[in-house]
Length: 116
Image (cartoon, rainbow, N blue to C red):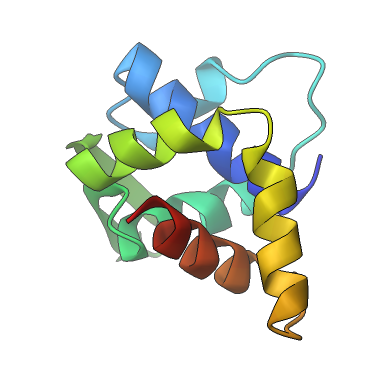
């Protein structure tokens, strides 16, 4: 599963299952998905940074604790558009036209530009 699909999956889990913490996300991951714990952590951090979800990360000596309040309006709009079948290919085409690498940061940045 590529990063963009993981990003959408985690955002969808938070949206549909009202996950309020990291364990809530992990409980709702499909059993057939091979996604590492650290990949999910990176996605949750990015969802917070990208303002797709309202939440916070607290560092402890045992690892980060994630508290999730809700999906933001931006997050819901992103999900609505990103679920359209042609969206992913359009996103890839736009990034390539700009001559940029297809990285998670570029994907989210250009996805937001396509939506808004």
